[in-house]
Length: 451
Image (cartoon, rainbow, N blue to C red; front, side, top):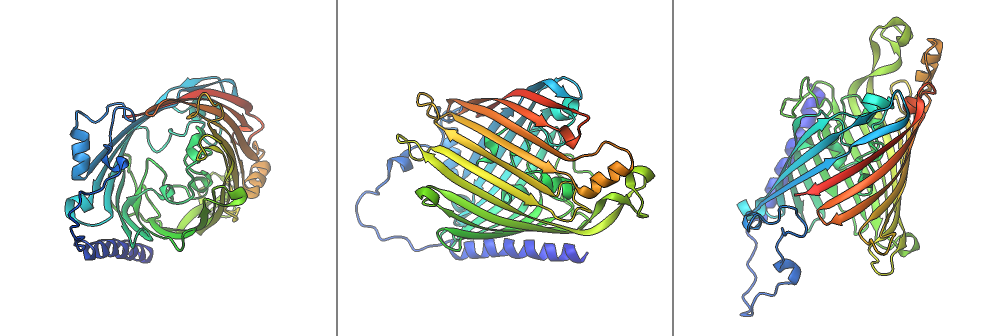
């Protein structure tokens, strides 16, 4: 109850601050009329939606009219059919897809609240996962499997940008990893070991953290401390499922504490080798209870007794994320070769199934001059299982989990601005950390359409 009260106070404070400060600036002084025609750039005159960048275009002008009134509508489709002709528990093939629907209200246009928006997102997922049906590894080879293969309300996010974007406040139904432990390079990959975030915290805090398409009550504050540095803090309901929340419409609060996140970072366009860089450090603390990985409630081996695991109070971890451009294309200097590395640690191996996690990748946009908008990516991840977990499995004469790794190679073919294909191959090494499952080769293609 104490945790919940503190959480509600944090959410309420940030929400009130956002509305109050925005309202204070709602009636700015009008600029003096110089008598000259208003100057507008070509970019300002260009419509938001057109046939070139969206499959369905501007809906005969209606879509741009709605945008001018403050209503922005986005629709996207992603599918990731894949099969494993080699390795795994058995050979198989699965199809799955995700429809995403976004509605963003510009509250400055509608209610004269400057720099304030309200975002609602909805997801619809169907299909089966190759990991779950055939390979048997721990981390899905298809990033759009999970969170319930059904329709789901995701975010309901009120966000304000204040003091010339130096302060951002957000509150509502938020997805934790949309703001923390994230990189714009992650979803150049298909494996869920990279896209959309390192998954180790989801193993170490079962049902305690959210990723798309799930969300929970939360609040966020981000401060641009200088042109190159920032800090941000978030608080989230630590029990987002709150019982049965199949469709994301259970708006009650959970009963397992509060999740706190913090992150500081440095970002610059002229970092190492005078190229864009970003370095961030973050951490989290969950006040709830989580199960032991090896012992039951009586202190016995959980794999032998069959009793429920003993509970630990609290869970914590931290992460380091490095992003660095390595090479620029001469013809388009904003494109070229980028790299990233992420290291995630949750050091208490009594309650952390995967205490150490590492991923990284290289993404080259415009590797082939005749395909300047294509992207070629090579990435990997490796997750190490807890020593205590392994010792308990060994004592119970079970297969022992050590570490699972994956190497992915893909090429994104940007056929139009609104349609791409991403053929990919993945080598899953020691699936689920077990030597008893044969290393697997997964072949697939991701397709994405922006409507």
